[in-house]
Length: 320
Ligand SMILES: NC(=O)c1ccc[n+]([C@@H]2O[C@H](COP(=O)([O-])OP(=O)(O)OC[C@H]3O[C@@H](n4cnc5c(N)ncnc54)[C@H](OP(=O)(O)O)[C@@H]3O)[C@@H](O)[C@H]2O)c1
Image (cartoon, rainbow, N blue to C red):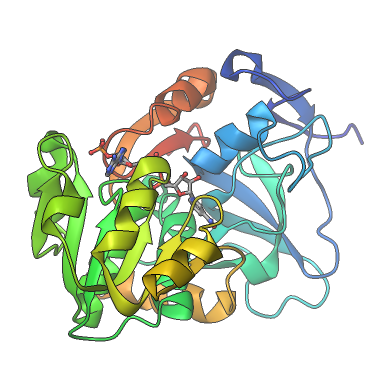
């Protein structure tokens, strides 16, 4: 029998967005031990995809070529491999594909590590579901696993309108923290609607002049924003960054702690807690824009602007 093919967006070397190519390639077939074969309906487009593509992360996470990017996915299980008991054929699922980097969701079918995908919330469509788990996982890990954020504490969230930030604001609000968030003018009301108690328009106000005595800084911006954030913390507080490694020396100078969000400590717990919150309507995704597979280059160029609300989607299934 002739091998079935599928459409996939592939990358043949570290390159600019324009080098992403839509190709017909053999479809993955049998899932191996611990894997599920998933028919992908939609993929989230994340800054990590553009960083991997450009080679900025090649020392940390080298990828082999040809590579298929995509760390977030929503789709339907076609078949499960040996040892997979949490999923079944025909189930709608979504995931944060942390073990499948370079063999990701910008393709009509993928073999996903079954520990990184779970049944999709019943109240979401595929486009929205594909945007949840990378951002929500990062926010949960930073706020709760590393930051140990508690009700009544004050948290400063930078990059609050982004694909990670929207979850950081909603999760911190859900926890009962007092949320101070930074964003640009066009997103101020949007971020307030997510549950922020105070929103600072970074194009008009320097947050370091007005914010002080916070217990936790959750930084999704980096650079100068990270550096100015040390002054906003109370002694004993903590700075958690999603970008780069904050300086332990500076933390010590300010009498605070710091950490960088990396691999989550308990992914299974995060996947189940986030799914329950989405189904309860307490955590809402926001789709910035939907692109087709033919428009993958534009989706990457858009993501690289690092501006806007929520997450960009690449729609993979043609018959949604
Ligand atoms: N460590 C990890 O595990 C991990 C996981 C996920 C993401 N990340 C990293 O975390 C960062 C954020 O990711 P993301 O997916 O949220 O990015 P994103 O979706 O591209 O969002 C970026 C957001 O930053 C905002 N922004 C830009 N400049 C700002 C400033 N000076 N002050 C406050 N907000 C500003 C933009 O809002 P406006 O349009 O309002 O300016 C935009 O909403 C990226 O660098 C990503 O690589 C790390």
